[in-house]
Image: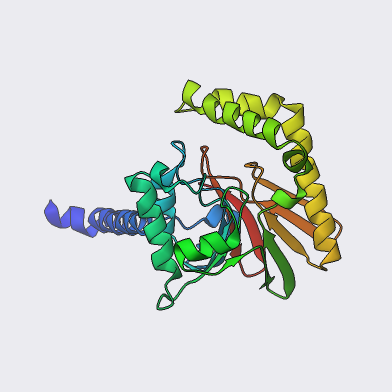
Length: 267
């Protein structure tokens, strides 16, 4: 009987299924591979871009960010502004310090990663950040995607509403953050505010339009911003605009670059 079962190949098929399951489990433990976005499993990103972490805010998704940065390989990491919610370091909790420690470790000159820090409007002045962290801070950063020119900057310079009405912007920002506490898990109320705020929608579009105009002026093929907290991907002519979204809402997003492919990816 046992010989018949063996000769039937049933045990071999079970063994093959077991091996396939083990491989799948190992891949899951190794981290995400983003095949559905790039058509192939991503071993190492050429460049990853994140923005608007807002360390110091109670809604910063620090655990998910640590998970991403420790499970996904990359050659270059661009931090596209608003690492901090404010320069008041007393607002940072234990997890926030862990993120900052990880980012500084990745930035270490002995690391095999290149890490670029870009100033955001919540980060204060560049020279203050340089003194605080001991690293170079850029206002914008030019780099290559395959044979094309890419420009990364936070995007607050394109936000005329914030610069023209700083007090109103601060109040709106406070109310928006307050909405996180109404529904802290699914964030339905904050999303409803974003969807139904004509000012927010107009401002998001204006930032995109002005960023693309600036990219055209700089003869860049890609422009990657943050600031609006609205993940976006838009192409007009030979200019592609991408927005990294933020790490205060679920899902959060990052821009992943592999060869010629550039994607905004939820996480």
